[in-house]
Image (cartoon, rainbow, N blue to C red; front, side):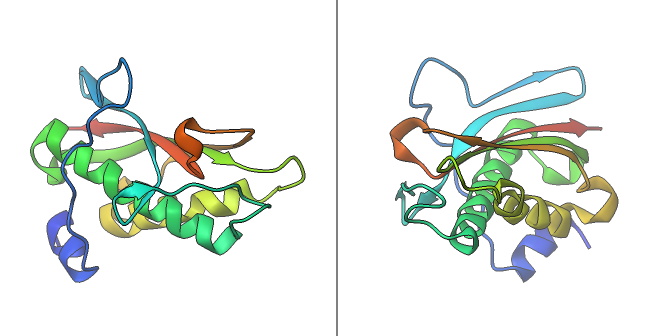
Length: 152
């Protein structure tokens, strides 16, 4: 099954690349690696604002991270032209806007990691990962995630 067949079976339509909110580009390719800038969570086209441990639950945070994964795949598609060229999702780095006592950043980030595994398969979708709790994210977003992929 191709990546696009999997996306279709999950009723996922890839969005266009978002316009950067500051002085950066959405992606950079060097050699066979593509680095995607951090993407913030959006809901209904607007920033998904909030703080885990305060006004957003872990389950809702997982949905936000899943939404970010969809946006990341849209940008990755724009970067490489065909998601079937992705040999491996190499690394995911997740920033979770959370209170000082919230400790489930890793579970929030699973929303992204699990979708990438579903779409790219157990080998190409398995990746190294970091998940951090941070005091704030631009525009008050609840989650921001960046990604590195290998293409072939």
